[in-house]
Structure formats: C-alpha cells, structure tokens
Amino acid sequence: MTLPTGRDLASLVLLALLVGPARALADDPASLTAPSLRVGDSWVFDRALERGTTGFSSERLQMQVEQFRDSLTVVGLKKDGAPGAFEDHMMGLDWGQRRMVDGDETVTGRPFDFPMAVGKTWKADFIDPTHHGAQVSARIRTSYKVTGWEDVTTPAGTFHALRIEGSGTIKAQMGPSSATISGAAASSGESTVIAHSQVSAGGDAYLTTYIVCDYVPSVKYYVKRVEEEYNAEKRSCQPQHGHPGLVQAHALILKACRRWRILHVETLWSARNG
Image (cartoon, rainbow, N blue to C red; front, side):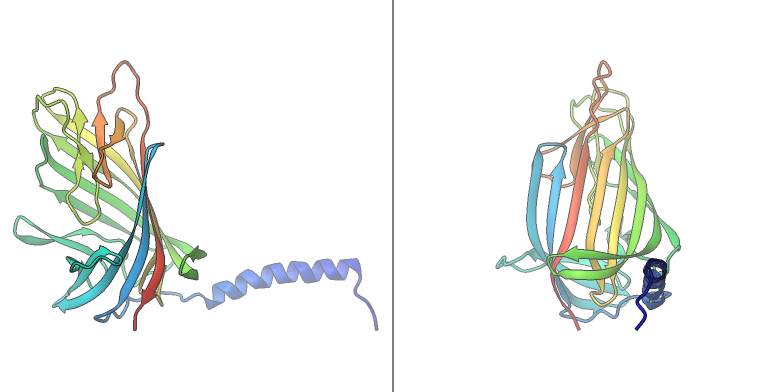
C-alpha cells in the first residue's frame, strides 16, 4: 500500500475546495417562481427594533394567509398568542405590498420580483400622499438586487436562502409650519412620515434605507429580514417613543449633528405551510 505524499494531500485538499463550491452552485436552482400560497399557511417571526444607541424592543408576531381575492392575498397579522382576531393586510400573490391610496389600490413595496435569479434587479417607487403635520407627501424609492445563495440560521433552523439586497431613500416634502416638531417615519406597507424640528417655510427631509432579505422557496417567504434606516448627513434623527420605525428629525444646530440609526430585524421562529 502506497501512502500519499505531502504533495498528493495538498492536491486532494485543493480539489475538495474547488469541487465543494461548484457542487453547491450546481444544486442551486437557476430561477425561482412565485410561491403557491394556500389558506392556512402561517409563519411566526421574532421582530426586534433597535433605536439609536439606547432604545430596544422585541415581540413575536404570527402571520397567516386567510383568503384570496382575485390577484390579492389577505394576510392576517397579530402578536403570537394574542386572543384577538388577526389584523388584515393586503398583499399581491408575489408578496407585493398593497394599500388603498386616494381610493385606488397601489403597490407600495416589492420585496420580491418573480421569477428571481442571481443578478436580477428591480425598483420600487411609491409616493405616499398622506399628510402628517407639516408633511405634504413622501416619496419612497428602493433598488433591489439578487446577490446569491447563502446559509442562514434562525430559531426555526438553518436554511439555504436566496439573498436580496435593497437600498434607497425616503424623501418627505414639508409644507410651511410653525410647529417645533413635525416627525419622521418609515413603516413597510403603512403610512410613511418624516419630519424635522424647526420653524420654516417648508423644504425636504430625508432618510436612507438598506435592506437584506433571505428568501427560502420551501418556506414560501423570507426567513430573515434586516432593514436599516438612518438620517441624511444634514439632519439629526432621534426615535419617537411609542412608534416603531418612527424617527423625529431635528435641524442641524451649530453643527451638533448626531447620526442616528434605526435597525429592524425579523427572524423566522416557526412555519407551517402546505
């Protein structure tokens, strides 16, 4: 029996390193179609919210498919274990976020764009006409890209997921106001509010967003989602108590500008779907 030399062992190690990733890539589907959702499909997520350097909160949420209406999915959402009924939200069959704006059904977000394949890009552009204090409207623009496959570990287990990254801006148009606080917020699928604290004839306020989402075909949804919101360089933002995702923007005074960040993290706790 001839034992392998040091050079032979090195060659075997190199071959394993080269073949391993190639085999993983070969096993990954070239493209993913929209999931086949069914009434009763459900998911439980742990949601954490970090505000600046001191604020932190968390909750466990249950989500389930309740019914279908034409091209829409009615999804119920409530705190896990709560005795009350689910709060209904309208989604597309591809998980596109919808809501009524001025009497019309409007797409407010597109976290996925099926069929999805590595390298695919798309954009979402939504104008929220809702008035909040001095805010006249808000424009939310996000660019997405499918960057590749990765292994993601959550309380529900370890999954091989398709990674989607997104980045964008939220620009709020401010009307004339003499109030000292007008407020700032971004909430997926709901009203978006940005504000600043100053007496002025109006102007614009900004937030920048960055999103990472890990989608798993067998789960029919993402197993982890991270969203970061932070203020533009000329604003100083602080969280407003009692409103997840809400920030209160302040004018830059004597260059004493602090950069604030709000971090949303959702991880899958459990899933039950057919």
